[in-house]
Image (cartoon, rainbow, N blue to C red; front, side, top):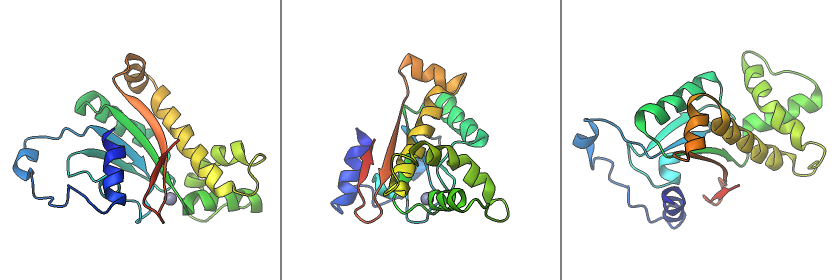
Length: 187
Ligand SMILES: [Zn+2]
């Protein structure tokens, strides 16, 4: 698939989408992204680079901890119903501070300051799911589970996204980006 091929080019340091001025005039007529990517706000995770795609190729929704809230869901519905995306990828990553903060919050039984509890509460279900079975690699396990749970949210949220998935016109997947190697592992 296009995302996997693009990630292979990125790892090989052989991008074909290096000149971002290409297609600029065409893009002013409208956008036709082929996929939506829900990923973390982490500055090291840059979907267009990771998947070697140009402007207009990816519809990207970013929030620390890459979970789908109501606003994210509305954005995905727009991408599905109006822009015609064919795939949704929920992309977690190694060393995710938001997942790590959630684990700490649960272990210490405390909440971080400000609005951060909103992130922690959204990621909490993934940590609870894998806590007992993965005590030694909890960060990695919870990061993977969080991506999977949110891919499932994308696939089953009615009425718009669930309908596209039932028809088979959109598929959703989860993956983890390894910051050290650049590799995206699909789950
Ligand atoms: Zn993160």
